[in-house]
Image (cartoon, rainbow, N blue to C red; front, side, top):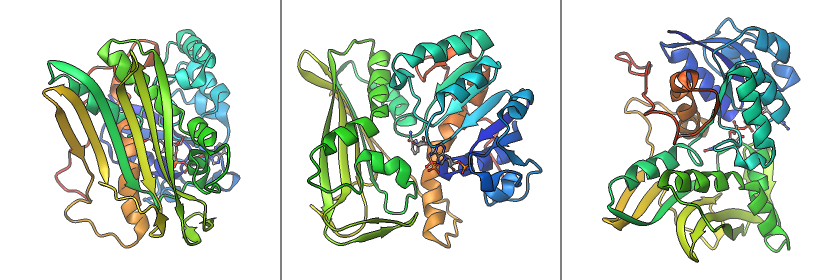
Length: 352
Ligand SMILES: NC(=O)c1ccc[n+]([C@@H]2O[C@H](COP(=O)([O-])OP(=O)(O)OC[C@H]3O[C@@H](n4cnc5c(N)ncnc54)[C@H](OP(=O)(O)O)[C@@H]3O)[C@@H](O)[C@H]2O)c1
């Protein structure tokens, strides 16, 4: 079967999704939504820095729905719930990296999403790397311990060259370090991590008494000029360490933590073990670290070439899930519902 795919926006992650779909022998790109006026009418391959694909980007949602693709790969900066519901009602499946893991992020609107799936006979699945695939990693690891006392996931990344101020500012980056409501800003901006905690709790078959968010910050001691024409002034937040914790009987049993820094003028100067550390505390304790490296023949000409590798691991879990999502019963599907996701169509003997 060849999966017919419509791509939703071509930003940082979207570009990697398009590239992955174009290279995958089991998939065919048939359409693409552009949010930016300037991208409408342009070839999607060119928008993504690869060869022309013969598919032009459009902002005509009805025309994209009329294509009746098997799946939309939704990578828009913010999830537009009304549009997602239209897609699902039209019987089209969605895989997404945008604010969706269990759907609880949307509060009462989660029911609208589930209803749209039921109406259209469609399925929605959300991933990313964190939250997303890394929680699956933790869930699989927990299967090795006879007793588990805590599951913890720590993402530690220097994000200096990640160019998405609109998704990073809500995490607290760029605010004055002494802004009174800073913790509220980060708690709201990182709320999707709560869904990651719920996903692990569901996998463990437990109900949490509470979910809590704790945050620490570091400031830059010099003005920090970043990609995306974004400057973080001296004395403003350039390091965020946010932990979402699941509590039972007053004990932290699940933790998902993001520890991100920018620039070389950070105070305090946090040291990072770059990558992901998954720790299942118990009998025995299972500790796994995951880092991503360039391929052996990688020729990086600019910093952008390196950041794209990190963006691929955000995009790929959703792409890999497409066959399972297309085959799944209608509704909201999480990693706990889907079978083992097989990396079909990616093995190559002549890499480029
Ligand atoms: N779970 C994870 O591990 C993880 C990691 C990174 C990112 N993400 C999520 O993945 C999604 C994409 O991230 P990204 O870095 O690719 O984002 P991005 O490049 O900053 O934005 C993606 C696209 O959204 C469209 N857009 C821009 N401003 C918008 C607005 N105000 N309202 C609606 N759409 C707008 C643009 O479409 P055009 O292409 O038409 O210009 C843009 O290219 C985000 O939701 C992000 O939070 C998840």
